[in-house]
Length: 148
Image (cartoon, rainbow, N blue to C red; front, side, top):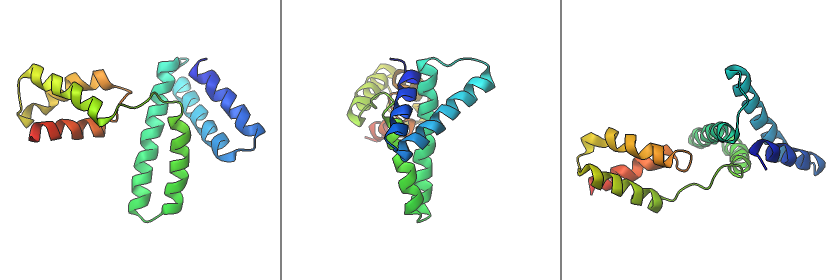
């Protein structure tokens, strides 16, 4: 089943079960997908939809951090609930250990431990983990490896 079909089916189920949180989040996701399709005049495939979902998840994570910093736990909780729904449709994220293995291999391949070549390392690493790992975590792992 395609991601779009799964989203639509789950939205219908949420409507029948009167699950307003899931229903509203799925409506926002579908609207974001439709907006990208209209803007780019294309119909998104599963990979395109996954990219939209990844972007939506990233926005939620940033909002959660901002709301928690501002002391607005009520708004952060709403964003966390949205994020949980969105993450159901995203591929399983890589663990720090998995990222560490790939990053170590690239660093060994480049034969360097110089933090100044971080851009080269990230340039080779990001295509391998795209959609499977958060860029911030990847950056953190590479920095840890380079620092010792």
